[in-house]
Amino acid sequence: MTKISSKDASIRNLEICKIAPVIPVLIIDDISTARDLGEALVAGGLPVLEVTLRTECALDAIREMSKIKGGIVGAGTLLTYTDVNNAVEAGATLAFLQVQRII
Image (cartoon, rainbow, N blue to C red):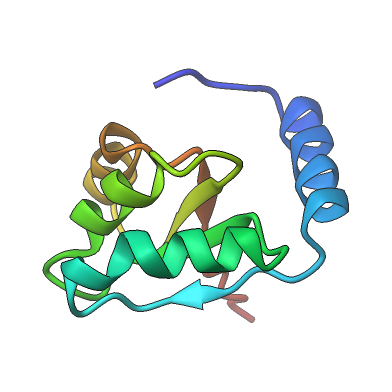
């Protein structure tokens, strides 16, 4: 996995926001629907897709959706380093993380 600086990550985030001010958050329960759903969203003007790692087939969905021309696929609900590594191996190029503030 390639590490990037905080500055480069911020620049990348800005680029993504310019491409897609709205990012659908997808919970894929049936892998047979993943490719068609992703293609429909990209064709409809939503090129950035977040697939949450909440289901058994989520990594397979990322693999399928990462093949879609014009699509940018990220993984959400990343709770461990293993989740991050698995998502990258599946083809995710973005990570959506939950941040908790501890007071």
